[in-house]
Amino acid sequence: MSGNHPYRRAGTVIVAGTAVWFAGISPVSRVYITPDAAERLRMLKAGQRGWVIGQHLAAAGTVAVPVGFAAFARSVPGGRAKRWATVAAAALLAGAPLFVSSLSRRASDLERFAYGRGSNAPFLAYSGLHVLALAALGGSLLASPAKRWIGVTAAASSPIYGAILVAKKDIPPFVFYLVEGLAGAYLMMWEETDSTEA
Image (cartoon, rainbow, N blue to C red; front, side, top):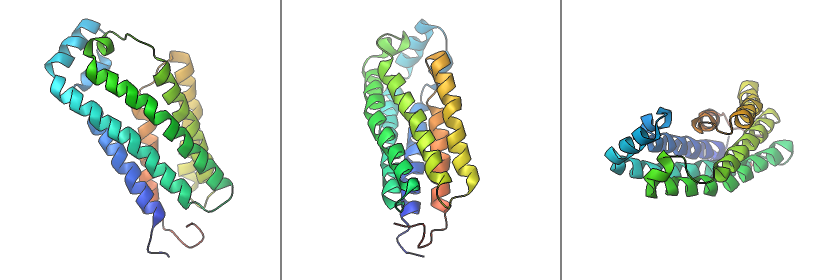
């Protein structure tokens, strides 16, 4: 077994990024389930400082998670597992700037977010890329020596989330990070051997 543990390092980045992301969306969290726009705006103004800090934390987590998956993709030996891991990492890296820009607008324009103004296209694209990434991640894990349940979990979540996204034109993004964080935790505990390391 190598002392480098590249999967463990990648998993640590993914889990840390996921934790930071969840910390970022926690301030004024009731705003996401409050139907009245005026009440949402009141809540955001009352908790503006925490909200703005939270959006910056969420942005940091949004960037960190794809970096962790990119590190995982680099570490996977050649073959189908590596190709699928690379697709997953590429999709997440492409989607991250879309959500970071949305977070920036949320922090700078409370009224726009509260009243749901502006195009939802960047968020839909970001969500669609997450759906693709989960399918590819599942393919990578299923083609690797990983336990089958983690690959099935990632792969099965993709069509479910994709169907919700198509039907509702919206999806709470925390569902993506639950699966990705779980995959990161699995990577942290993966017993790496010479056959599973780059």
